[in-house]
Image (cartoon, rainbow, N blue to C red; front, top):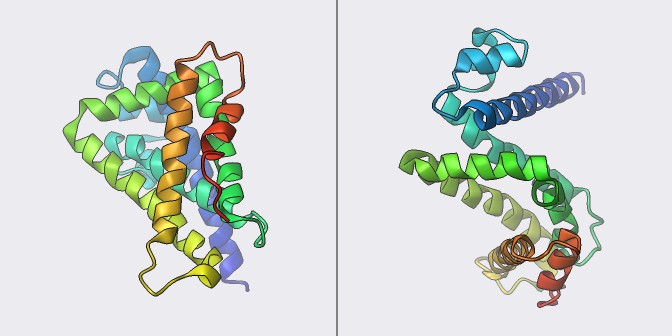
Length: 201
């Protein structure tokens, strides 16, 4: 017990620092551009030394891609927090509430869109982004498989991966539709509409 608690505290502290660095860096990227922003400037804006920065990220590129690791951790924790007897599809819908601010909040969306443009502009970053997003889905697939164990048709059951893939497709469809709309309705309602296309227990 005494070994696991300090590790948990250290990990939470580390992730908080990584999240703060990512937010600070995104604001600087928006203001000055990605190429024109240095690690020294990011560290200074976050109130830390360059050496401390490198405790959390190996490079500026890692900081950009690291946000997807943080997103994966948050989404996994959100799914773990859902009631075990809740239908999987309903749990995934509630987990996607984490994305609401990224879409509805103008400042958060501007940051997110800027980061996506940076990632798309670099073949190396884009390849790593695709790997990270695949990891996010794989993290959820294992958890969904556990919840669907009673319905499993075998050891290599494709259903959990299909369910997670369908959920992410619904989220992306809802995001696209909402951004192209007048945005009078909350993004959450678009998510509800997209995910109501399927009924998965």
